[in-house]
Length: 119
Image (cartoon, rainbow, N blue to C red; front, side):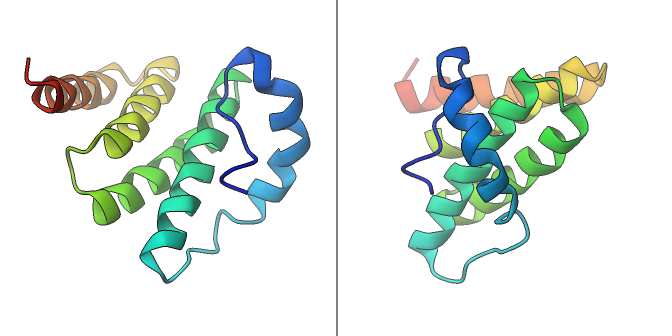
């Protein structure tokens, strides 16, 4: 599923819409192995991105938060994969008017990416 479900960009909406029910069936099925957790977090991240783009903010927030938690555990707090999920969660919060929480997460993502890039 991680290889099949694309990100939430508009050009991918048709495929996202088709695969979302399958992704939804995985939301509460956290895998045991680290490799499976990486793939699961990718599915959650892409599903959250699509849900955010479609305006399903409450669901996107829950899904993105799971992705962040999983990626923090698997990759660490400041790796690019984790920061991508953090940035998506920040966008979801921003669109819900939760500006302070969104700003904190955006700053975290920016700081982490600057560190990763050596800026």
